[in-house]
Image (cartoon, rainbow, N blue to C red; front, side):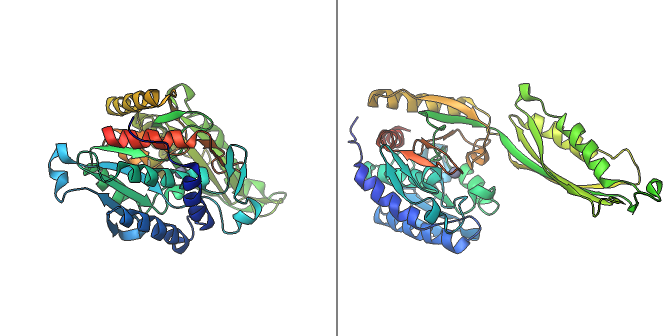
Length: 373
Ligand SMILES: [Zn+2]
């Protein structure tokens, strides 16, 4: 291995800069401030940088114009995001804090440390980019399903040969992510007929009864052995306890391992009808991210990463996880390896932290993988 481990102090100094800039997905201006800082790092390395519609940024390192036309010279795509799930003010309650081998702070593990590790890897390459160069995409809205960045990510995937995602490895392990469930959500809105619950209950048609039936029958569409889970996580309805309720609504969270399962559930949700014909139901929603199904190309990338880790002196494993990432958009198009960010635990949780004893090894892993891929 030609690379030396990056100095932890340098990694931490860069991560502190990004963490101090709180960047909830819901505040595009705050997210752009993180992007401005990262773009400065990219320019220092000679990148060609662009701002795309919706706030996505792209940085190209050694990518030749027209590279997308010849398969052999397509670049390596690296996916990152600058937003976090944490609202402004979180730093006051969850301050930047080093506790032994753990660095705590909002948005550090997911995924500002991934961005920092990537830039230390890019610096370590010292201008020797892999065949075709490297395209880095920085999304502003990954944590809310990438509504504005999805089209840019998919287009970039078509113009690249492989995708590497610097989301964290599986919590508290060295496991990379070689598959992710697809995620979907639905809102069902029920409209019935209101009536006095004591005097004329027969004239009413209960939207709540319909919502309750839908909850039980639609949750029965789950098929855990196929990787399909489905949960009604929110339900509301009614106007007063003595009124047959005319309104109700429920929201469904769906996870699927295959597109076929997504299609089965989607058809059943849309076909569902209340027993009482006086109640109508309106369905919105669907699949937000397609499943990232583990393919041959992804496994080959993983094997390459495992060999690198072995040479660096640690064992790598891999897993399929339930949560989605932008890797779900590239995996149906090109081989995708996810989990190449900083190890730690506590994504979206109070105990979010990066494992400082393991982080430099993962930065070296990414460096050597970028060199060989
Ligand atoms: Zn993330």
